[in-house]
Image 1: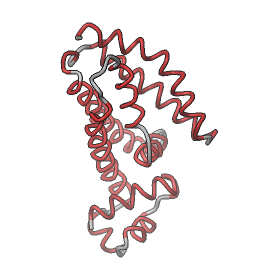
Image 2: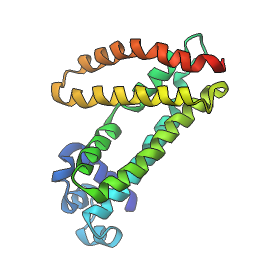
Image 3: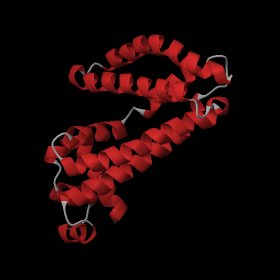
Image 4: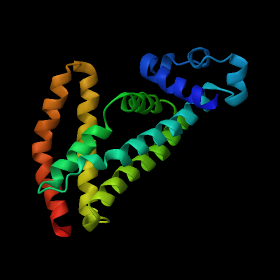
Length: 191
């Protein structure tokens, strides 16, 4: 039941947004009574905080599955950028964006989101390090990955306004052309 409530919370964040996510909607979506919901989570804040952690676990698992993007060919920088693109797609990222936006005005939520986001980012960096073990621990590679994630997230946030699916990919491809040499240089010392 707890898992159903967490998944329903994430679904509500995606479809309704943070502001319209209520404990009543969550309980209805999860198919449980309000009393059962209160038994597991006393408030919306408790539910959302637990959902942040649940969402982070899902994002970490998705990041760690990213090894399929690495082809061990002559262009690992392109593989890294493909991996980053893939880890930032879909409903999990949309729900994460809702939480980031809500954290702007909710200090308690902001603290939880920041803590969990550090774990997710470390998992992404760790996945790349596992797949490029000669480069693991290199400060330049870590910085290049964070820079690429910052650019990608900015593009994705902007895409929420223009809603043209092909445009977001074209913008990422354009940015990736500039990011590839940065990543290649960071990877090169270890190769």
